[in-house]
Length: 122
Image (cartoon, rainbow, N blue to C red):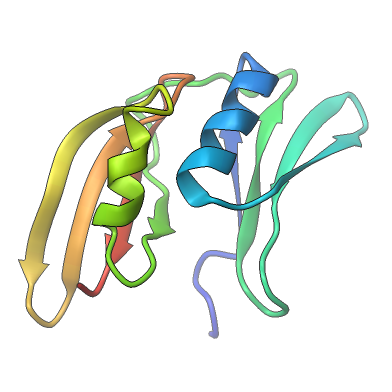
């Protein structure tokens, strides 16, 4: 298995607000696309990388108690973590060492109330 995560969907109520939030914290395009009745904001990746989307549509309800998706925090997740509150999110667990071998993690709430996480080796 190359990537355990092959796709993820983050439910949103306010698509424009969520698209802006993720574009700001990840410093990357979130491409708007209509899929049937759903409005999706695709996270673009290099060829072969896992990806996902923010989704506004029936059956997609934001919440802070469900599955936690860990996003790649790059070289040092603190760089992204520093963008979260200015972009409208909230840090729930600050950068925390797992072990020297396994790196660091942090949890945050996005602008829609979803709980997500970041991971980086440093």
